[in-house]
Length: 399
Ligand code: ADP
Image (cartoon, rainbow, N blue to C red):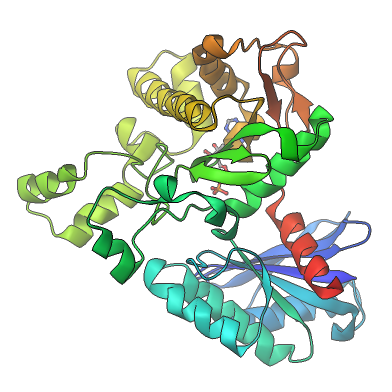
């Protein structure tokens, strides 16, 4: 069955058409600048060159119409009609406590996603516009909602509560939710396969290191802790997000610089992380690694601080699970950066970690990068959130 996977942002929409049997992507692409001048569709059929079509897309409905047009186009399309798309899988950022698993979309579910919007005011409304547009244009096609937060709903209370008045949890749902759940779940399952072990017997730590970054502790197949919190701002130092810090810093900066709360939050979300640490040099690790290798203090500072935070989380989660069998690296940086992986592993002598330097040079494929005699296995597992969403949608339809 062809499954259309949709990941909707406020002004963008990414899509992939995946055959659930062969798990091959037949076409994929991206609508950019939706609702802004200069909107365009980048479309790529498997094995063909990318095509760019500029056309006005005043809203997400217009964007989905363009996507359907491209997928069913006589020359460049991959299906002859909409009826050949068996289901749509939507990536939804926040499912609150309501969703601990993927679900088929109906009016109730759509309303519940709307009710979670207060927890993710930038993301859920954008996801909802995609859902509504698809439901209007494809009213007969079943749709699944797959949540970034769902996998982490197994965290125990001691891991998800903050040390603030319990009222705040009861009244407003302030707690750790965690994100990147689809990726952490996919990678932990795949790691067990690569290790030739049953997931239900393994303690794994998954480091999803991209522009947004998070670590999770996955014990016996279930998430028991993760570094992102109520929002994706907590945890690791990221491309432009601060990650963990003393909350009093917010008031301090506001006071010192005469800024509003919203302005300080903008700094913490958009101007911090390795971008901020490198004095504005770059949020892209390729630039920072280049600066690190040329011994520029900006690059050294950003990378060392980033790596140290990752290593601290690995230590914390090893303690939380009373041991660890495998440490997995994934996402843009985790999959592609031998330097970052080896710098993190330098901290892991206490786990008996020994890196195979040759294996560590490999990119973009499932690889065990530790030596056979390493005390703990270290793996690179490329994540594939779109495939995971397609699998979830197919499984729901089979039920
Ligand atoms: P997101 O999905 O959160 O936007 P990605 O998972 O695509 O992010 O990861 C983006 C990050 O991965 C960027 O910082 C980029 O520099 C880094 N990255 C990608 N390729 C490489 C590479 N070859 N070497 C080092 N870093 C890389």
